[in-house]
Amino acid sequence: MTPLLLPFLLVLQTTPVAPLPKGTALPPPASEEGQVIAPVQRMFDALAANDSTAILAEVRPDGRATAVVEKPDGSTTVTTSDWPAFANRLGKPGPKLAEAFTGMPAIEIDGNIAMVWGGYTFTVDGKPSHCGTNNVDLVRDGGRWRINNITWTQRTTGCAQ
Image 1 (cartoon, rainbow, N blue to C red):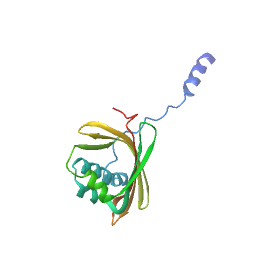
Image 2: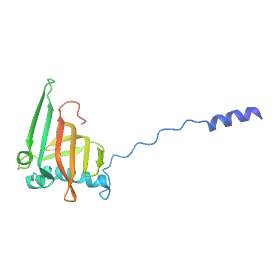
Image 3: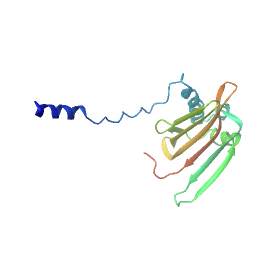
Image 4: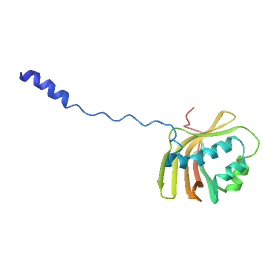
């Protein structure tokens, strides 16, 4: 009887496995996280539509847009613009622009402030242009989430194709 008991006890002492990774879909719109990501997605949609008015509808007027561009030679440049300059540069007729998160971004919320952090890809006329990480801070203003600032890294190497 003892020889049968040992294998049985070994089976009971199995090591638990790690849980399955979470999906990469955006959170449902009704959730608080969904409400936070919504203005970011609307800004991406406005950018794709070359709609500067729609871009400005998602931001607080006193915020900024900052790009940290990593050049192929290893040097870095930092440029900052106010929202009207950002919207005028990207929200005008021209090539088809598109920006999308590469997977589910991290979303942190504390009362009336929130942060969205995640990798992205940017395409021009359907072709990869660059990639990096977006850091978007938002403020709940007048009962709705609005983008206060966005800072992003931008590089042309190491991007997923």
